[in-house]
Image (tube, rainbow, N blue to C red; front, top):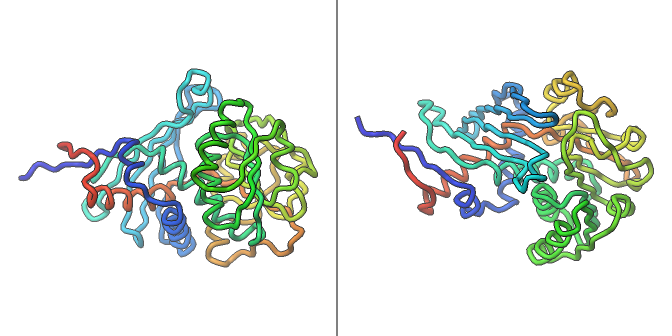
Length: 324
């Protein structure tokens, strides 16, 4: 029997594949349409928690319509930033759905960043005003970058206001993202300045079971949309109560997190992203509505994107083949 091999793709390899954000958005949208049609097998996340506000999660999914199966093993340790380490680490295993044979092991940090931004932008497609042009970013890390890139792919963004507790991170964001996206980006000195007056707001600070909110009621303007990548941690209860619509990416997993002690200050979402994408649930109904998406990050998003990364890597000769 011929020795089976798998393709190992490092973080640099996955980045070299250079799958663009519009392609990631299309793949993530297709995955949610599959979910809406009840064609996705996706058990709830399970995980271990060796430190407060930290986790290592197993995230499997099977998407028959996209011929995709696999699992992501992902960690988030917010205190890593104090050690000079990235918050997020992880690997993704991609399997052949016909045989179960592992096809690839790849770093998943690039996919995690891009699919999270794609989910935010998809939520905004249904919950934000189509003419939204100003963006506020709170936390200038990986998610701040990918979310801005995704919003720029779907909206006529012309001006961006960014805030980070670390001035050096804020300055790097301004320099690098201005050059990449060719939009005007201004640094501000307070979270309030990154929210007030903006059409689209993204907060992506640390995810905390017990929120330490900073955004007060009235800061998000009428008609504004927010994506809270940090599970609502930046938003006060008063600021969330004034939202006309709160959505998430999966109601079942949202309730599972609530049972673990998250979202104590968050009103109940009215729908999830599969319902929005499929048209079963209404999106924004008036220009004056404040809306927010509190997406959790789902395995179906990762497993929808990974096969395309794998396919292109094989075509481009990227990665290392190793014996299974």
